[in-house]
Amino acid sequence: MPIAGPFDRPIPGESLTGEPGNNPWEQPPQMSDAKDVAMYYLERLNNDDIINDFAAMIEAGATLAPIVETTYLQGVMRGLHSLDAGLVVAPVIHAFLKQSIEELGVKVRDTAANPQKKAEEAEMQRFLMVANSMLDRDTTEAPDEGEEMMEAMIATQEETPAEEETPQEDKPTGLMAKG
Image (cartoon, rainbow, N blue to C red):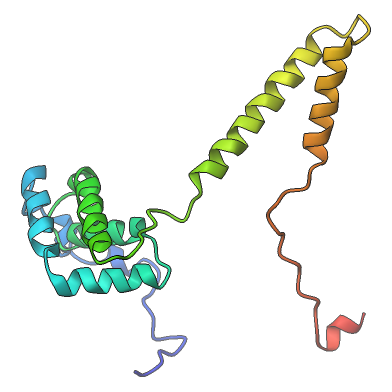
């Protein structure tokens, strides 16, 4: 495959000079009913070769959500259906692919996000917000044992380093790095 040179690229704004309506997604969609769109995808994806290829992608570490999104976005780009119809049938596509791939014995991850960790972090933020607001309410009196305990808990949570590793910056190399 030949490599494109730096000047073999579209000029900025070139896409705006074409005649409107030339692209498939600029035309009315071929299917407007969500049932028709769902049936189209179920019939198209009910193919052993396609399911085996998707299973191989999942085994290689991909998650199912981007596969589903790419699948219905291709239909939008080809003018088969609107983006709204694609979003409506996405859960149907997701459920069908997940069940089909799991039947092959492949464990399917829906998304890369960890919902448990996200929920725990949100709960901790709510706790810190409530605790701080309670401590800020009455500052005229000396703190009692409960307030001291909450202050200690807040201090502990704020001092706890994040579990995620921060990427270390690469040290500059070369002639200018010697300072």
